[in-house]
Length: 474
Ligand SMILES: Cc1cc2nc3c(=O)[nH]c(=O)nc-3n(C[C@H](O)[C@H](O)[C@H](O)COP(=O)(O)OP(=O)(O)OC[C@H]3O[C@@H](n4cnc5c(N)ncnc54)[C@H](O)[C@@H]3O)c2cc1C
Image (tube, rainbow, N blue to C red):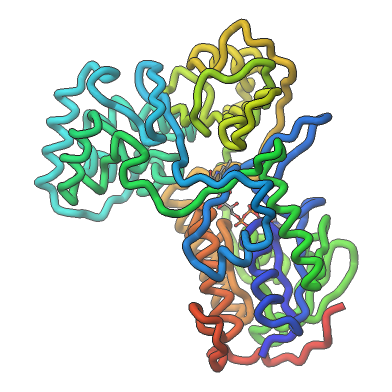
């Protein structure tokens, strides 16, 4: 039986782990440790004067798992939130064409001069057997044919990640909204997707076709996604989670393979008998002084946020637009009035841009404003009443085969030396999107607490008891 649990990293994975632990085991002592001054990780909003803009991720979607959804969304005041099933996104993928019927890249006839050749090469892939691929270029050519890869994926991914396809690990395209393509109009796409092999690589022309039954949410009162984190913060305090922000774990004491005590950067000490690690493993390896040598240094691409507010309404109804076309710096454009359903101004927009590498300068606010006009989001005569830049420090790791091997090595050394640590969250490299991160965290916590995943009914705990005895958390 675990009595004293430390959770490191207060992104949504750590917050969920803290809340489910105290909900199912009210007597458990839980301390949540976060290096930043506030909890939330990539889910946060920042206020500039009277304007609130989101910091990283914007839209939570219910997971479809009752326990998770009740814990995370059950306490929200319905009046403050807009609920919607249609994510209503768009994209700009080839020849500057704005396509507002889906976020999946539109590479149809009207924007693609080599359409017939590319389709012929896509259809040739139907004869291929599934295979193992050593890099993204091999995988994409196998799935989509060389035409779409050379004309679209290679330049788009070079712009979005600053990397060549042959240097990236298979499946990296799925993390940046490029899992499936739209290559025709509504009826043509329905017919093509009837073939299971094409269904895996093609999307419906309209996002309302095959729409998820899961609800998305966004505050309707002009606030940002930070409102969700505020509610969860209050819930953690009410449940008795100890929250330590602005702190890191600097030292770890072990007895055999069990962690027994941790020290934080402010000098405080906690006796624990289990730890949930929701941040990169290298920090755990250092604090626990595990035997691990590595020369490998990952490349992380930070995201620069360009916030704007306009006096007049935006021209486009989409919630967000993925910009794949390499002629633009913009990566993703979020249109807040459409997310919140508010019809009164100011009309806010955030453009995410991946920071250039090799000391190149970031584009200026004016350059990005010009892109919003060129894409058709705002008119040139719509007065911009506010603009500001910010940087998301966490950023996107460039997922090369070497990066994946490094994460696996780190995971293996943690597993073999520490028996009372659970690895949760995006940082362990197995999952990236919020929904999958949450479902994996839920399963791990249920196994840890010795409960049945569906009903919450108690089961005998399968894990070995930590050998060291621990005093209560401070
Ligand atoms: C730019 C960007 C856009 C994204 N957009 C989407 C999207 O549209 N939809 C979607 O589903 N997903 C999106 N994601 C992914 C989504 O944000 C993640 O799935 C989710 O936020 C992961 O939560 P987490 O708790 O695992 O990690 P994080 O939110 O990264 O939280 C980790 C926390 O750990 C803290 N930490 C790190 N190291 C330490 C340490 N040593 N000690 C103490 N604390 C530490 C960090 O400060 C942070 O608060 C996006 C990610 C990025 C980078």
